[in-house]
Amino acid sequence: MENLALLVEKMCELTNETPWCEFKCSNYDADTIGANISALANSAALYEKSYAVMIWGIDDVTHEIVGTDINQHSKLVGNQELESWLRNLLTKNAEFEFQTVKMDNKDIVVLIIYKAVNQTVMFKKTDYIRIGSYTKKLSEYPSVQARLWDRLRSVRYEEQLAKQDLPLTDALKPLDYPAYFDMKQEPQPTSSDGIAHYLLEEGIIAAQENGRFGITIMGALLLARRMDDFPRIARKAVRIIQYQGSNRLHMLKEDVRIQGYAVGFEELIKYIEALIPSSDMIQGVLRTKRPPFPLLAIREIVANALIHQDFSITGAGPTIEIFSNRIEVTNPGLPLIEVRRIIDNPPRSRNEKLATLMRRLRICEELGTGWDRIVISCELDQLPAPQIDLFEDGASEGATRVTLFSDIPFSNIPPEHKLWSCYLHACIKYIEGAHLTNSSLRARFGLKDSLSGSISRLIRDAVAQGLLKPLEPNTAPRHMKYIPFWA
Image (cartoon, rainbow, N blue to C red; front, side):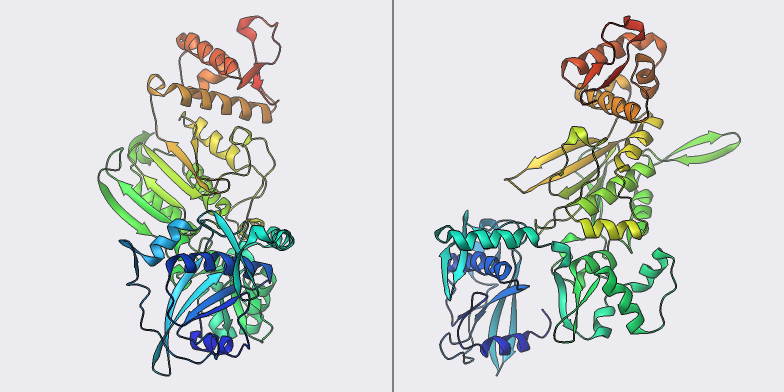
């Protein structure tokens, strides 16, 4: 937080505690702190504040600076550090940070609690609210609860501020705005005011009522020179891990990309490409390198993970794991679209502004064709279709993992992966105005005519499991065509 001492001074000027400010002398009761984090986060959302604060070392009556001798980093609950204990018992959308500042030669501890986003912040499965200067259970105040949920539905994570109260030059400094103009293929203005005009229009920075500027979370996520400069989003940096072989036993390399998603995207893809193994192949008289995974598919899968992640799940970001036989890309949050309809459904994003700006910066499209290209590129290389796995953890939390496989002989592909590849082949054929047949599926897997029996059994299994249906059920078997179950 910028200007922490100034923030404390402003809070001390209040005549009373407010729903977004709580003073403590030295009360470090863990359960009280947990309930107050829930209450203050929810109250900040209700009263449209960017954040709320708890301050230790301030007299809660006179608001005089008295200092505190308790260090939150050494405070233990059982054998666990206080912050770790709190994060385990708060919902994943709880976003907070402890900071310390010296004032009048005395230590002041400030707990900055960012407003709730998407859903209420709960502690021990109970949500709290501030009523005046008291922390109460939200369920005891139905009218307040209704108003809070109205606010939560209208809040967008991307529009919140990652930094605030900055002079214009300081607001521009952490952002790679030259790369922004390069990606838009537009000339960069020569003055700070001219640059700010474009960034304000995009919602990358925001003008504040006090004449200063803030950097939005969207702006930081996309254009940060160093994501570590923004504590609110630092954990959202892309993590890449390379393993030896096909399991996680031996890690070869780990890297966290420090640049924002947009300005660092091309370098991220090149870095992944450099890590994946490749094989030599002869084309004519030339020897060329052939990657085991379609680079187009890698690009689309990584872009999807960045754009469609659930930012309300704090402490987790996109992870790319590279094995000898596959690449796994994991992002926090579950898809908004049912997985089996990922080919034909119109595009949906929980981060609409971010997705729109990524499109204008030519990182992605909003046409809903990304998964079409992913599947088609795998089919052209006769690879198994990418697998989508969901890891659910509560009503609105969880993670999505997409696995891209290298070449696997047809006989070694697990039955469930064969069925998924068969189903997605039918989806692609249908949106192209064609239909799945025994012949098209053999070509998709690169199989000889002699294996038509194996393909017929696969199609029958897909029909039995409700993934496919015959286009014309009474057609002779050798002329049968199939379409997805939803067609």
